[in-house]
Image 1: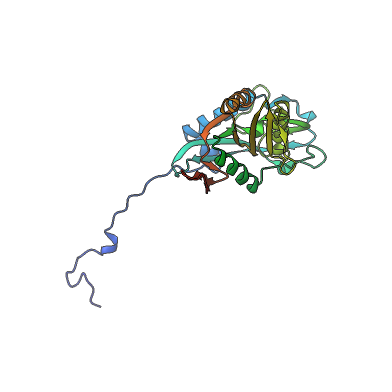
Image 2 (image 1 turned 120 degrees about the horizontal axis):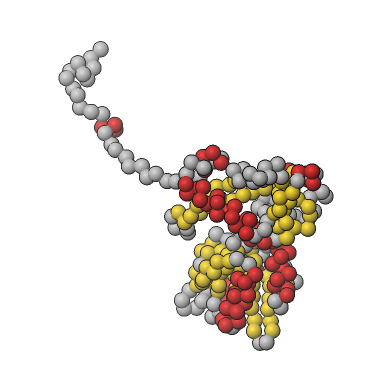
Length: 274
C-alpha cells in the first residue's frame, strides 16, 4: 500500500489545522456539592438564606411536632437580561411539595392570573389615552404569603443549626415549592389592594381598578409581575410608594417586556405592537 508518508508527502490535513476559540460560559450547578465549590454561588446561597431568616419564614421546633415532614432542596439558576447577557446568580430554596398531603398540610392551591386578552385591552386604553405604563416586580413574592396550615420542613442542606441540628422548620409563611404558595401570595396581595381602595374586575379577578377622587388606576397582576397605569401619574407614584412600603419590589420603570413579549408603541398613532 502506498501511503502519503511513503511518498514523502507531509502536508497536514486541512480540517485539523483550524483553531477554534471557545467562550467559557458559567454553568448552573445541578447539586449542592457543585455549588459550594464556587464562591459566587456560596455568596448567593448565603444571601437567600439570610433573606429567609429576615422575613421570619420559619421557626425551629422539636421534631415531635412534625407529623408530616416536607423536604427541601436548592435550585440554582443564572438570570439573564433580555439580550441574553448574564444578569446575576440566583439560588433559591424550594420545598418538595410532592411530600405534602392533601387535607393535612394544604387545601386550596389555585392562583388566578391575568388573561392575555385583558392585558391587551388595558394596554390599548393606556396607549390611546397617553397614560404612562409602569412595570413592577415583587421580590420573593411567594415568601410574602402567610400560611393558614401547619407545614413542617426539614432544615436546608448546608445550613443546619449547630445548636439544634435535630429540630425542624415550622413554616409561618409560604415558600417556593409548596402547593399553596401561589394561592397564599395572591390572597396577601388581594387583601392589601382591597384595603387600598382597589376592587376586582367582574370579568378578570387579576385586574384591579381604583376609581376614587376623579382618579382612575388599572393594575394587572401576573404572579409577581405587576403593570400599573392610570390617568394621574402623581396618584400612581403615591400608590407605588405604599406598595413598596408593604412588599419588597423593584420598579422596572416604563413597560418594555411582559409575559415574555416585547411591548412597543407606535410613535404616531399609539398602535400597540408586540
